[in-house]
Amino acid sequence: QTVLGLETSCDETAAAVVRLEDGRAQVLSSVVGSQVAQHAPFGGVVPEIAARAHVESIDAIVERALAEAGLGYGDLTGVAATAGPGLVGGVMVGLSFGKAVALARSLPLVAVNHLEGHAVSARLGADIPYPFLLLLVSGGHCQLLEVAGVGACRRLGSTIDDAAGEAFDKIAKTLGLPYPGGPALETLAEGGDAARFVLPRMLLGRKDCDFSFSGLKTAAARIAEGLNTDAERRDLAAAVQAAIAGQLAERSDRAMKGYAQGHLGRGLRFVVAGGVAANRTVRARLTETAQARGFSFHAPPLAYCTDNAAMIALAGAERLALGLADGLDAVARPRWPLDEAAAAASPTHL
Ligand code: ATP
Ligand code: MG
Ligand code: FE
Image 1 (spheres, rainbow, N blue to C red):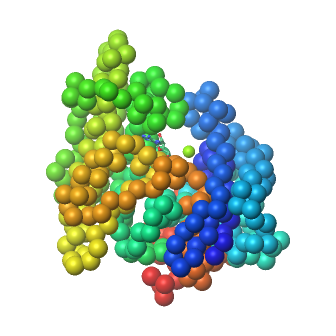
Image 2: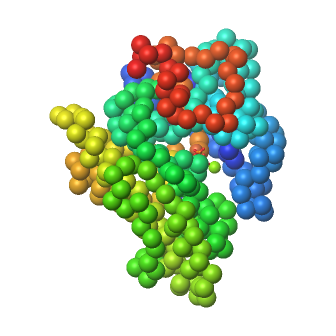
Image 3: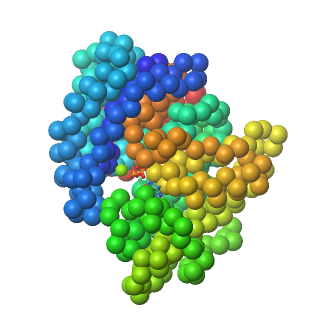
C-alpha cells in the first residue's frame, strides 16, 4: 500500500505519504502546516479561521508531500482523510479533497477516525504488534483502550471532565503562557521544584480507569493568582506537570493490572499516543510504570505525537490492507467515538 493521508480536523493542515509493506510502515513524506500564528492572538483555535486556512493551504501542502516523497498521484494505491472527530468545517476540507483525489484517480478512499490515527501513530516508528494497551492523551481526549487489531478496540476508561491536553492548555493560560499551552508549560517547568506546591491527587485509588483534571485546574488557578515571582511560576508549572503525569501513570497502572490478567502468557505492550505523549515527564512516569508491570513501553516519534497526516495515512493503509474502504458518500463527523469506528469495521476482520 502507498497511501496519501490528509489531516484537517483541528489547526494543522497536514498531508503525508506512507508505504505499508509486510506490516511495516515507512513514512515517505510528512508535511504539517501549522496555523498557530493565526490563532495565537485569540488564545485558542477559532473554527472559522481554521476552516478558511485549511482551504487556502491544502493544495500546496499536498503538492509538497508528493514532491518530498518523489511520487505522483499515479503511484498511490489509496487515499485516506480524517472524517472526524473534530471541527466539522476543517474536516470537510480534507475529506472533500480526499474524495476528489479518489474520484479523479479511481483510488479507494478511507474515511479515517482521527483517534484511530493517534492509536496507530506509535507504529510509524517501530514494529508494534497487536494487541496492545493504549493511553490516548490528546487535546480533546483522555482514554485507556484495549486495542486488539485494526479497528478493534474496547474503551476501559476515559476522562469525566477535561482531557489531559486541555488541562495542560487551560492551566498554562492561568500561568500567563501563550497558546498552545502544553509545550510552553513543559519548558517553563524545567528545573522547577514540583514539591513546592501541594495539588489535589484526583481519583487516587479508585477502582476504575477514569480520569479527572478539573479539580487540579481549579487548585492551580487559585495558587497562580497569588504568585509574584518567575521562580514560583516555574515551580507551580513543575507541580502541575508532575500531578498530570502522576494521574496518567496511576490510572494506567490500574489498567495494566487488569489487562495483564486477561493476556496471560502473551506479550504485554503499553502504548501512549496523542499530543501529551510528547511530554518528557509524562513519558518518564509511564515508562517506569510499564516496566514495573512487565510491559514494554512504546510512544510515537515526537513529530507524530501531535496532529499529523502520516498517522492518518497509516490508519488508512492498514484498513486497505484488510480490504476495508469507504464510499464517496462518507460524511464528516464532528463526534465519533473510537469504539464506534471499531464497530463499523467488518466483523470478519476483527
Ligand atoms: P484530539 O486528537 O483529541 O482531537 P488534538 O488533535 O487537538 O485533539 P493533539 O494534536 O493530539 O490534540 O495534541 C495537542 C495537545 O497536546 C494540546 O493540548 C497540547 O497542549 C498538548 N501537548 C503538545 N505537546 C505537549 C507537551 N510537550 N507537553 C504537554 N502537552 C503537550
Ligand atoms: Mg493541534
Ligand atoms: Fe489529535
